[in-house]
Length: 409
Image (cartoon, rainbow, N blue to C red; front, side, top):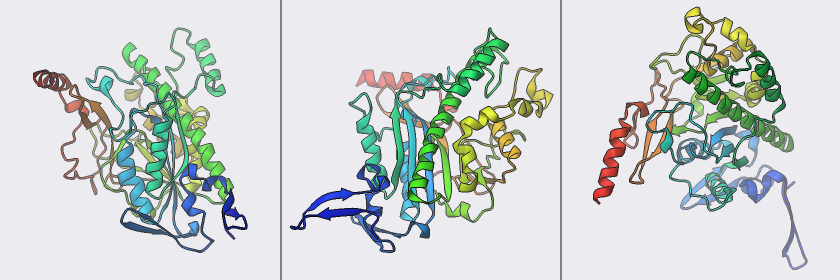
């Protein structure tokens, strides 16, 4: 039986097309729905032919979930080194993204480059207030690589202020600490100085926006699974600033044991504390993915005080510091008794990065966070061997140099 039906008139002219929601052209997955069950679907893009099995049960199904800002979104590398390699290896990839267009306040100021971030140069500049042209571009790019859009939301901002759990949490915070920013102690707590307290409150709002956006996307994931009567095999939760530097091969993870897979990050400066695990990316088998799809709600159900009490006095600093996001993640996974598998950076070849606009209009990429592993480390390629840490760049000198060069031309 066909998953999709087209009714014709007596002259063999198509008159009516009835499609399941997930087969509609808008979701860039129509090609998967026009063949009979068990019949192979062949598609040709350019001069290359890629064959996909018609029965989705014969290949892995992977959901890729990204939430953040359009300004920080590393789209081109995500398509080139993450989505495309999986799709061309007969893995069904559904892409879910929630991106905001409002300029987010940086967690840390004074870096020299934070005020000069720009969107991925591969993305078109929008001519519309609702960024509908960028949305359509993303749909076409994802679809052209034999993947599908599960959900794509581009909006000005994520409204956390009207969310009931946070509203209640803030009301209690105002009662307990009337002279503090109500977001200063949840979920992350750090008041070592006024500047740090301010940054922490701002970071908390960004954390909550990100996880609320993911939870909204997760509702789309669950709806899609219910409509299509399947379950994903793996779910990848990505940061918007993930710059993929080489092709991702999920086979490297499939053969490993574990409920979730995270970067080992065991060669880092400073090193991870024993209470921390890296939260730069999280890849989950489906049976444990609900916890992270609903991580926004999970945070409100988590014993944050218990996490803090488990820290040493050296870290707590006389009650001025609590668990950071990576400590909270470890606390949650420990409480849920999940098997966490730390994998080499070469297995998940990305770094959290930034696109910085220089005075002459050119773009410069750098790593604003860096993870490396002792075993199978991520090695630079000819294309990206020039990239370095953002904090190692003398931005004042670089901007001045570029401005002088532009003025002399």
